[in-house]
Length: 424
Image (cartoon, rainbow, N blue to C red; front, side, top):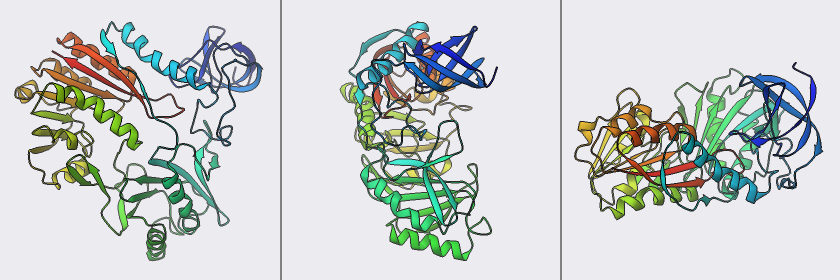
């Protein structure tokens, strides 16, 4: 069947942002197709017991289709929904979560107004890089491709971060190994810039004295606080040059971030998440709280303004960074909350708990919370499916989902953040 061209009508937009239809009883997923459109697609590969479809011809466009504002849209796989009229795109995001919760019989008290973060706000990104014949392509892969679209003005990044990225180009040409793909992670903490290169560098594919000197020059010329390197995604980063601490102000804390550490994608999104999560805790006058899956302290810092905080995280560098602050009333634990969740007995004295897990969710920790006496729990998630599962566990354990709020800081993508307030 692969390679065959078929004509189909798009029924809906799926959870990944693709148009969804059916052909001979099998689902077909078509990137950048909208509900109601009649399209001709090439069946390119099997996916989810169906097919991925490559758009060949748009025969009957939707009235909700618009011209993408970004000139790279047709060649870049970074944004998936710029072709959809903004009101319709936002309505689709807002409607997805209630449907998931209703299917699982999770009851929601109140839906708070969604927050939509604008473009040009992203302060961190991982860029694909490819050097050949002293020329660099630095940008994002095309959708479902290893080809790299060179991008000098991304509508997602902050102007400040984009300017820094462009300043890296002439230096990376002399650092990254010719004809071998690499990744360049860039981050702006608001105080400093941090860069990490993943992949082969130099003629030997590892940093020699020549590459280290070139990296030091790049750091000075581009005003970088730190540049790290690692051979592969699973390797520990090696700091090649550090000109100053990579510091981030988080509430009462100033945290020196480890290489490649996680921050919320935008400052505006982080502020919205912190306010949504802390507002009910302030209103309840909760004093003792826990921040689970705390990372480098997105919620820990602000929580310290209210009282003592137990912060738990499995990533050792993040734990070390928080411990190094030596903050008063802060108890930091290195703890794998999947295999060793904070137990109900550990939570007897807590007034509130925030949990913000990775995309896989917090099934084990939600189970422990469901058995605990904690009066107020705040769930933060970037995955509606696993949030729904965890919310059901809490509901079955005697919590009610008092309110929900969507915070969309992943502009023109299918991703979003959720904040749910649970009370016993």
